[in-house]
Length: 229
Image (cartoon, rainbow, N blue to C red; front, side, top):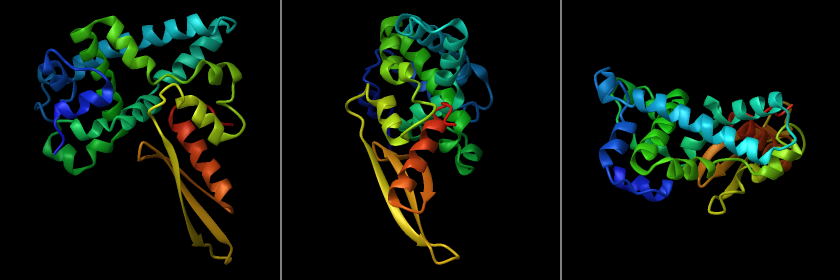
């Protein structure tokens, strides 16, 4: 069974006060719905830290982007889909404390729960190590400046786009798994899943392996909160 000490190498931070990490991983269902025992207050703080960090990153690096463009970019990065994707990268669901009902109904994979826990984790790092450590953690999930400036997150080769989005983290690895099935008209259909560090983050189908992989990458990009059409 995963323990809280196991997650610290994944996030690149070691807590001095492990109780902050424990609180960040505690869902309200586990704490009996009491806010003082769950991660809900940390989620509130983490959202603020996330917003200012991403805003500063975009302001500093996207120097020719107008205010409206910066706002849209920030929204795509801090949206629930993106936070869910970030949480999946570090397998955050393995470390959650959930009530029995939430556990039995798939809470460890629920998008909203994982996104909220990710924000709570940001707050825990901030309270334990300060703003610099929180920023370092957040920036490890940011898409590359080149990908943001190119606008490729909207159109183009989705496999390349996906690679560019996560290339800021050299330790992360993308792979594709492709299977084959026969459609009703006897034409072959390929099903692809894109894996990030062994975890599925998108799937798709196509009449060729390449088409299926592109569809899977497109879905992964969409789930991260970017426009793909």
